[in-house]
Length: 159
Image (cartoon, rainbow, N blue to C red; front, side, top):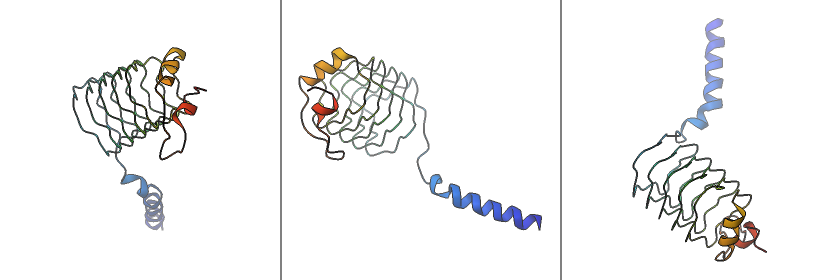
């Protein structure tokens, strides 16, 4: 009887956790040189790139929800069409980065450097930014996100 019960419990656990086993496992890339790396289209949920060199890296169409890029150098990186919701980019260098049509809902970018970024169609809903950076981004903000339907200027609270 005990063997049957154990088998039944094991079967239930496999049914319960089975759908989660095919998903990508979060990776840790802390303090790594990844200049020009291509993560386009990858599922990176929960991964860490803290203090890594990601200059000119590609995250085009990546699922980077909840990813930590704390202190990373992402100068010239492309996040076009990426989902960066709830990601952490505090103290990251994002100068010349491309956020066209990216989703950044709830992301933390308070101490990030964001000079000369492309943000046409980006969704900045509930993004934590310094007020001075938010005002500067409003100078060039335009477009509407193709997934969320939100206007970039509205999500930055420009008006």
